[in-house]
Structures are given as structure tokens and as C-alpha cells.
Length: 188
Length: 109
Ligand SMILES: [Zn+2]
Image 1 (cartoon, rainbow over the protein chains, first blue to last red):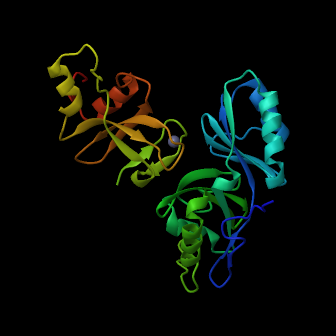
Image 2 (image 1 turned 90 degrees about the vertical axis):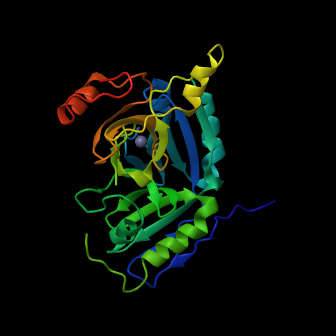
Image 3 (image 1 turned 45 degrees about the vertical axis):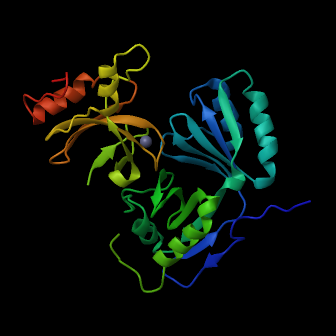
């Protein structure tokens, strides 16, 4: 048997203006289909409680659904529940045009938290992170420096960042450097 | 720096979140076309000072293709619109006319 491990096995950086932590394994399913389809809405509600509005994330405990595009959601469940969730989706969406793919091990997840978390993010993404512009519940796909990433706030001053697993180390270094001690900008 | 609003996901982003996909509204001449038509499709492009129509992809975002109408000299964006169309919609043409009266581009004006 083998044991699944996340890319950086929980690496963390605590010596700067914000803390950076790799969150470990998270079950992730790409669900593509017609987001107005009744069967699909019902299936997603069973997992995340509701269908997220465009550019938002719906969270329910550890589970959630993020709006990726007009025909795509990212479903999040505990890593151990991915295969059974996909089986459930396949059964409940039978006959509709859809795709449910397990992307858990193709992703890395980070948390950036602390009073300067917004600044750390703002140094890396071409996105307005001022408190009036980027709010709780919003979900944004963009880039952090050179790589694509998606992010949202779990709570005020705590961002969750999802990127491709192949760039996990780059992402960790990037976030840690942007959070290095003494690098406050105090612009937000 | 261009600021584009993706008509698919509604995000307003600057150009590094997007990828330029070349001239818009090309007719893809292929089987059954003449050599001249095929040459036109492969090589002949507009290179205007002013109003221009392009395809863009929201590659660091929702991943969808769309169209943009903009000015090549000032980088003003007149509007963005759906990829699934052969010509700019009326509201885009009207928006351009408001800013650049008398404009024309290929067969559009
Ligand atoms: Zn988009």
C-alpha cells in the first residue's frame, strides 16, 4: 500500500508579516456541466449546501463548491471521500451531459493568514485586495506571479490559495518571500 | 495596460490575466476555397491605427474565449462581447461610434 501525501507535507513559514502554511490533502473534484440543470443543482446541494453564485464560493464545514466558470465548479470534500463522492455524482447525474474528475492530487492548497495577509496577496496578484473590493465569500481565479491560482477568504485576513501541485514549491516560496519580515507596505 | 472585462465570468482584470488570440471575425477559408482566399485567411491581417477587433482568452481565469473592441493607439477598450458571433453586436458598434465617429474596420462601420 502507499500513503497519499501533499506536495510539501504541511510546510509552513512563520517568520514574517503573515503566516504561510500548506494545508495538506484536500479532496477536489472538477464538475463540468450545465449549472442550471436541476439534477446537477440537487447533487451539488447535497455536497456544499448550495450552488455558488458566479465568482463566489459556498462553504459548509470542510466541504464546499467554488464557481470556476459558467460551466464549471470545483467541489471540495475530505480527501478520503473523493471516490465515493464521484460515484454518487455519477449515479445522480446519469443521463445528463457532465464530467466529474478527481483532481485532488493535481492541486496544492495554502493558507496565508495574519493582519498583513491582504498585502501579501496584493504583491502577487493583479487583483484589488482592498477590504472594500475583496470580501468574504468571493472567489477569484487569477495568477500569483507567474502561475495560475484561485483564492478566497476563509475568514477576515485568512486566504486559502489553490494552485497546481507541480508548482507547489514555487507557490510556497513566492508567498513566503512576499511575507518576509519588514516587508509591510501598509497600502491597503 | 489594458483593462478587460471578461463577458463570460464578469471579472475585470488587467491584460496579464488574459491572453491575446489575434484578429477577430476571420473567415476560416479551407476546403473548397481558392488559393487567394486561403492566403487571405492565413496571412492577411489588419494593422490599424485606432479601432480594432481581437479575440482574447481569460487564460488565468475562467478559461473562456471572448471578443474585444479596442483602440490600438490609446488602449481604450470600447467593449467585450461573446465569442460565438460573426460580427460585433450593435451595442459595441454604438459604443465605438460614440467615441470614434465615422470609424470603419474591414466590412464593419
Ligand atoms: Zn472570464
